[in-house]
Image (cartoon, rainbow, N blue to C red):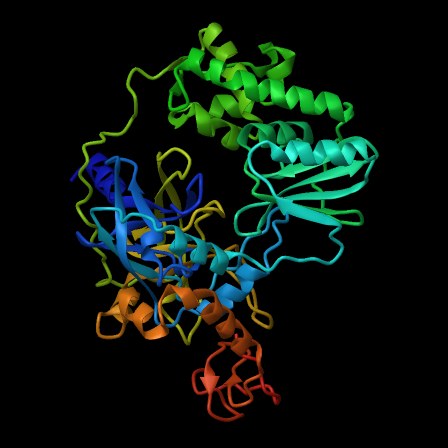
Length: 509
């Protein structure tokens, strides 16, 4: 088998998992088929859905096919309570990522059809996934849709109010912040720290992602280091609306939102560009690989969509880039697979060469990265392993391979617990594929069985919250080793590591 065939077979089996109950649908993780009907991904990204598999879809970009999910099961030892607690505490601060937990593996049974969404079930799932609304310091709040957040801004500006305006999504999770200061908007944060404040504001006007807002006169936020906006607020709002209104016409000139562009010369000097785009055209040049669509270029480049389109148009006029001569670089034959085979029948030793393979979430482009094996993350849980492959933090569910053969499921950056010594190099966690044996049908209930046993979806939020409250109660009967974190029946030597325990009860993790 040639490398090209191997890569294509792997790409054909990789799918993107989405929550389809929100608009636009939300990317959760990627994963891969291990049989015609079974799909593996990370539990930390889908732990809310065992009782609501109908809310998910799996899109296979190379085959251009979408599947539904019949059932979803988490690894027996995945701490869903801890995952839920961490989820409820998220703030939307720059660089915030939920910690990676052990046993981060989920098994989905796929379906060729997507069930129809039922409004009452969607509403219940939305309530279950909404984080608590924090009222402290909030002077005003409300639901908004589309460009209604501009009306909120204008009202506050007319009142010469100063404070922190936070935009939230359908689950009350903050997605953007705006600093208002006596009729001005000096700072704006949206999506990524490198997005300059003015362009972050323009992208908010273009994307209109907010479903609610809060205003705190004394609100605080760790703003990324950036030069404040100097333009008057009314001019900033006008410019944002102008860009949003002209965007569709520019898209039409360039072939539409799904058009893809590629470089046609080997190099380009950003200094020769017009002043308006010179600051970002270098990143744009690197991003035009024939895979990213025009609609997704802005997120990769770190600019607003309008400026990116203007830059693409200028590069086309200069003859240094062109639209690819077909709609997509993928075969799109509507057939997935073949399923991937797990290779757990050979040893992996410290510092063995490993490979990581995934599809870029924005473009579907196949990516290979190289690194080394760094042993087990825990002696008590040997199937939780470490590698040194520098995978972008937003990538979860990638393949970990030895000699280009699948051995593991990548989870994300290693989470070092308090009292645990960090390794001398940056490490990332992955699950040994043999952990699938812990998820046999005899050990797991299907989501349908679980829903019947717990009284259906209507009790979803109360059940999840009850688990978190129970986990927060000290369990004096549980004695946890501060090194390997395994449970023991009594104080003294650890049953796993023969080490001495601390002398006080430890809260469960």
